[in-house]
Length: 152
Image (cartoon, rainbow, N blue to C red; front, top):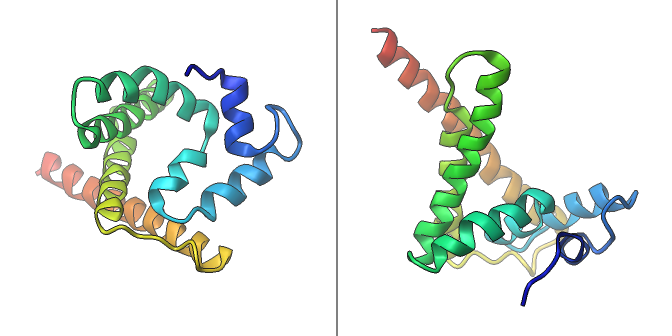
């Protein structure tokens, strides 16, 4: 079944595109998701729609789902880095590393079958935010190592 962007956003946010409640619903649903994998179903539905339609699903038809998922995260990071590089005028792979780590976190939490659905919203939000923050801080550390190794 094909679903339009408009239908996809309504499904993910519970409100139509452009609704004043869109951001609130997006944050509430994504941060309060029962696990980190479900977080990504709600986060940024416009970007998610196009990544799913043009990157993840075609790859999943040829490769295992885990590979398709990781490549989708890497592609998303490269896309963010491309915009950053165009604006800054210097090379950076910060987002590629960060998104690769978050993709890995999705696969690991799926493998561990994490499910916080019986926990309060704040506990679910803290769990999802902690994973994002850990991946972010790890990316800063990895970037510092990479820069140090290139400068030596």
